[in-house]
Structures are given as C-alpha cells and as structure tokens.
Amino acid sequence: MQNLCKDTIFTHFIYSAELSTPVEEVYAACLLLKNTYNTTINSNRNGWQSPGFSDGAAPSVIFESLKAEVIQFANQISDAERLGLEFKVGNWWANISESNAYNVVHSHPGTDLVVVYYAKATDQSGELVLIRNDSSLSSNLFTNRPQESRFPLKPQAGRAYAFPAWLLHYVELSQDDEDRVSISFNLCAYGLGGIN
Image (cartoon, rainbow, N blue to C red; front, side, top):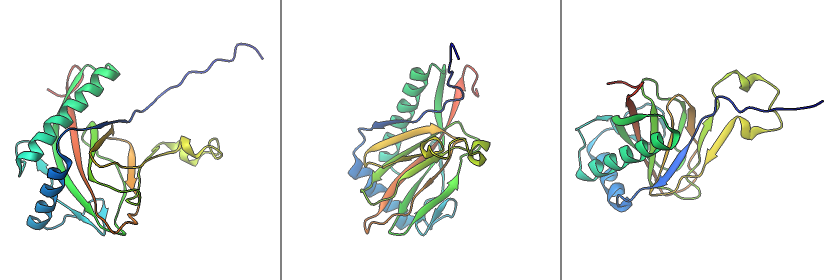
C-alpha cells in the first residue's frame, strides 16, 4: 500500500477561558436568584434551575458584566475559527446543583453556540460531558476508543466553556456536599451567514 492519506472532517470545537468577572459576586447573585425564583425543570434533575432571562432582562448588574464578557469570548472564538460572525445572547439561566443533582442529555436547538460558566465547582461536582450525536455511536468502529464518542470536562470555578449548540451534552451526578453553580448562555450568530 502506498500514499496512505488522512483528512479530518466534520470537526467540532470546544473552547474554554477564565473570565475576569468576580466569581464570588456571580455565585452570590445566583444564590439570590434561587431565593427569588421557583425552580424550572428543563435538563436539571434534583437541583434548581432559574427561569430563562432574555437580553436586557438581567436581574443584577453582575450578570450584565458576565454576559458582556461571554459575548467577547464568543467573538474571540469566531475570530479564531475564522467564522466571520458576531454573537449576541439569546437567553441565559442559572443552575444550582446540590449533592446527587445532574443534568440529562440535551442540546440547545434554535441557537448557535452554548457557553457554560461555572461560578462554583469542586473535583467532586461531576463532569460536563459532550457526546457525539451521529450514527457513529451505533458502530463498532470506535469500540476501543471511547474518547471518540464522549469528551468529559472537569468544571473549574471562574471558567467558561463554549461549544456548538447542536452537540449533545450532560452533566454527571454531583457527589459533593457543596453546590455546583453554573450559568448557561445561548448565543445566536449574526453577520455574514448568520442572522441579522
């Protein structure tokens, strides 16, 4: 055999960055949300999830600061990936997961990019796991290479993680007595090829 060639196709990305918005203030604001709003049930099980807030409806100035930094992060990703797009936040919500809380497998239809920011997390908080959502999961091709079908991330407080909204993902069961606190942002692309 000669001239064996390989092309990598249909790649996905995940970016992460440490944000400068004061994590302690974000955490305190999330606790205030929990004391103000009843839980909604979307993907969170055994924990608390706020209602979704749309652009311009942030209940605290710290969330406005965080939202602006998330947009800047997303636009840096667009530049790095040469997407030619800019992003705006469609909606966002907070999650507070106590011990034995988790998030079921889901995606974020109707949006382009997901950013998950952790305001509090420990080594026992449970990992954010991205999984392939194509028919390769039913193939034996990658049986000996599980990293080809799932990508776990250990959350770190003060860090944001961004990935395409169509990727299936879940959050493992928290095995810590301390809360895992995150804020999820749905971002829509606009500009060349995006919405106007």
